[in-house]
Length: 200
Ligand code: TMP
View (cartoon, rainbow, N blue to C red):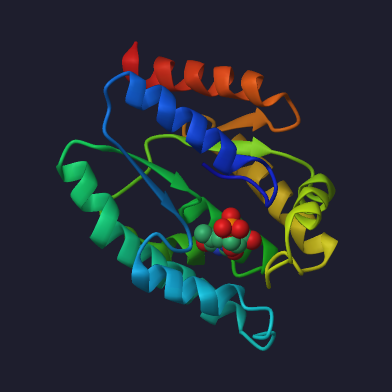
């Protein structure tokens, strides 16, 4: 599940989890960066607003390090046991935030992340499409902003444009959903997409 900050990913993941569990599936939920003890420790470093001096490449590698741990400790074992994994952000976040937002280049991001992912690839990526201003406004209402959320609006706009661009480039893999729609409507659209992909 992908999208800018404040686009409602977590709410939709919870609804989808319940839906799939009711269908009899074993579901594992993971969030990035984090999802493991080591990944959560890396998350603390990455998002700490005090670390303003962090280089873009360090940032990319830290996200990839947290991802490598998640893939090895949680995702690969869960898939091997026949479970389904829903991830709150994954490699497309690095593609747009570090590749496009930070300007490191999408190819560099995928190259670095190949080491973290190995053969683990998402079968479906949902992109919760929301204008950057709306996402950050929603976040500001909720909590203190972290190091990424504190970036200027032009960064967040590049991120959203990056998602839209990737969704256009890979329509079979990345499905955009209008995140301004009501929660129930989005859930129904999501279920329809999951049904079409996996159960029809
Ligand atoms: P979260 O607030 O959705 O938990 O994500 C933390 C922040 O990290 C969010 O601003 C997006 C950013 N992020 C990246 O820049 N690159 C990544 O690879 C990931 C997973 C998240």
